[in-house]
Image 1 (cartoon, helix red, strand yellow):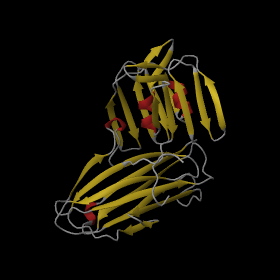
Image 2 (cartoon, one colour):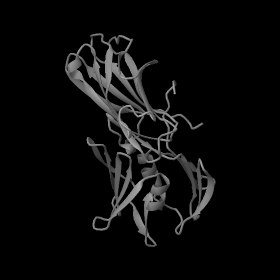
Image 3 (tube, rainbow, N blue to C red):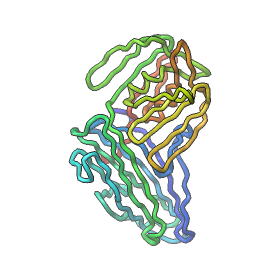
Image 4 (spheres, one colour):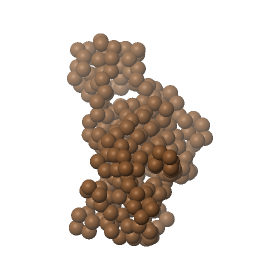
Length: 294
């Protein structure tokens, strides 16, 4: 079983003031996630959860209400190959519900949205689930959250620095892939051929020669990297767009474009490991965030 990690966002609301305050907790700034739009790559028949914590910063007690407003599945809202629910603490609902806990001032409530593409879901499919959440005492303070899901193949990559042999493990089995140029290190970052790392993680790859720009597309996620520029851009759905700084830029070597493995992999939803003794980088894809009920 994959290691379970925690991906947490905090929403603090002020009932009397009519405004919401957002902050991130436990999320690296390098991943540059949205406060309200989440991306989860998931293998078929494996669930994942997006977690949110709500804290009452007022002097007035309130419960929380939520409603799923859109289920954009490949076969429509009733697609039998997809299941979604949301839970306040350990009480779960399929479409609409209210937390059982009446939040006192400074009390916190957990909510998570659990999504399961069942065994019939196909690799490459994508879906999105949108929901509204509001303090029951003030429905006008409604906030909208969207979880975007891409169905991907579970994959593990093992790359050894300065070796052109890469171990690739999927559900179908294990094999060694030979690269024409080996991974190498620049400024403490492992660089790998842009097309290889993207294709192994199921992304479509684009190249704009005029801008010298690399594009990775996975589901509703678009990533942009520019050769010799220490910046990247992340687009998720129609609402979220952010540019982030990189500490190492993509470069061209031996007529091949190389990108920093950690940035590309983590932005697309993978877990990265490093063995200093063997100089081996491990890419475990996708990174799964599970609920206790899942």
